[in-house]
Length: 200
Image (cartoon, rainbow, N blue to C red; front, side, top):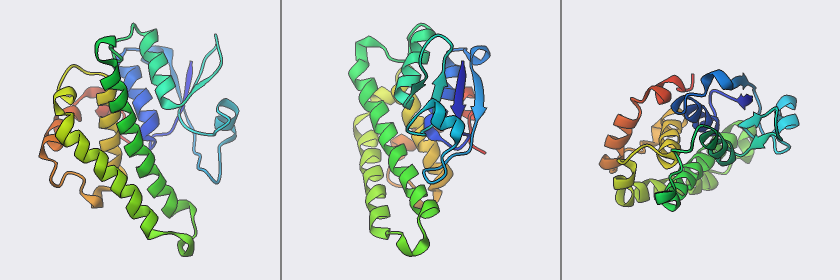
C-alpha cells in the first residue's frame, strides 16, 4: 500500500501515527507530495478527486481517502484497537473535534498563503480561531478523563490537532487557561509515534 502524505499535514499525521502504533510500517510506503488548493498535485488528484491528503492506495481495492476513513481502515486491518466498540461514540466525537480544530487551523494558513494580501479577511480568521478556542475549552473541561484513558483514535486526533497549533499557530498561545489539556499533551507528545511524525 502507498499513503500519499505531506510532512506538514495534521490529517496525514493521524494516519502516519496509526501506521506506527499498529506496527504496519513495513506494509505502507509513504509517498510525500506538495499540494495546495490553488496548485493541486496531479498524483494526489489521481488518487483522490478532492485533492486532499491523505489518500491510501491499495492493490486489492479502491483508494481510500478522508483521514477518518484511512485511519479506520488501517486500524481494522491491524486488529481494531483504536476504535473500541465499548466507547465508540466518545472516540468518534473526539476524533471529529480534533479534525475540526485541524480544519480551522489549516483554513487560517490557506487564508494567508493562498489569498492576495488585499483580499484577506481578518474577521474570518478570528472566527476560525474562535471555533478552535471553543473546541479547546470543551476538551479541557469535559474530556480529560477520556483523554487520560487507554490510547484510541480520539486521542490521536486531538494530539495531532494540538501539534498543528504549535506548528502553525504558536503565537496564539492555545495553552493559556487550559492547564489540564496542556498537561495531557505534554505526556502524549512523548509517544514515539508522535515524535516520529513531527513536521519539519
